[in-house]
Amino acid sequence: MRVTLALPHELGQAEVSRWRALQEADTAFDNPFLSPEFTLTVGELRDVVRVAVIHDGPDIVGFFPFERHPLGIGKPVAAGLTDAQGLVYARGVRIDPLRLIKACGLSVYEFDHLVAGQPLLNARHERHPSPIIDLRDGYDRYTETLRANSGKTYKSTLAKQRKLDREAGGVRHDYGITDVEPLRTLLGWKTDQYRRTGRTDRFAHKWIVELVERLLATQSESFAGVLDMIYAGDEPVAGHFGLRTRTTLVGWFPAYDTRFAKYSPGLIQHLAMAEQAAKTGVQVIDMGRGQKEYKDKLKTGEFEVAEGRVARASAGAGVHWVVRVPVRKTRATVMANPLLLKTADKALKTYGRLRTVLQG
Image (cartoon, rainbow, N blue to C red; front, side, top):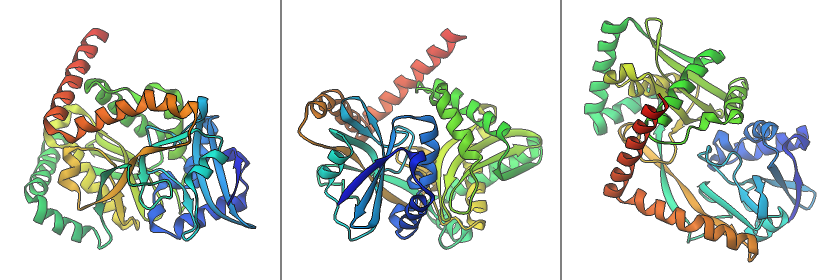
């Protein structure tokens, strides 16, 4: 194994094409966060992004995108935003994870959404479910499954959509929007949601807003930003921005106008999105790791992602352990305990309400 390092913009067209070919050759890598276009776009905005190009003799057999931070701390590209992380590589190639991170100049590489089957993965790493909507047999088959497993949710969502149609004007769904103005409306709802629930507002960072806008403008057969919105009359009600490959759409930023909350607009939007996505060839909607009620209601299966780190014996890895690992283990304990999770969520929402009042 030989590793060369590059900034994303230094990759040539042949290398990008090879990355895409390796990705499309294995369904385990069928996620837009693992696409070259995602890393290239983030690299335009973040000078910490690197790509390790892995060679076996004269052949390129893998790509490892990552961010390199002080003390040799390595993180996934756009860490904290991505729901799929890891290498894209040729199956059958043996990759030593410690040799790899050493070649990358890293003391440690941490991750929280490492996809299955990675050479970075070991038995100590924590596994988590990533709920999916399976559309491989079409939207009608999906709704049959939904009726069988979540019949009450499906019927009530359709009833609320009819009520919204009657009371607020004709309901329509626009899928695959490329206009930036609806996106900004959606991001405004998402900012309000972050503040209301006590979470950090990701869109307070200008580079994240710029990233999302650039990804919306990226439209090709193998990779695209996908924006869809639900309207009642001319009024935007709910929407979602995600990314897709040819066959996988990832859930990323769903949000809705809280004035329409009684109609369950998020569920209406997700069902409409699934129907239109299936028509365009999408086979799986990956809703991403995280316990959310709407995911439990809509899912038909799960993928698995892992959380942990790969570390070499070094001072940087030691500092990273002290700063990060106890916090991660505490969070995992809270997430695994329904009572603790409910208490923490309630505390965050209380903090969000207080913050809103003080800022108002």
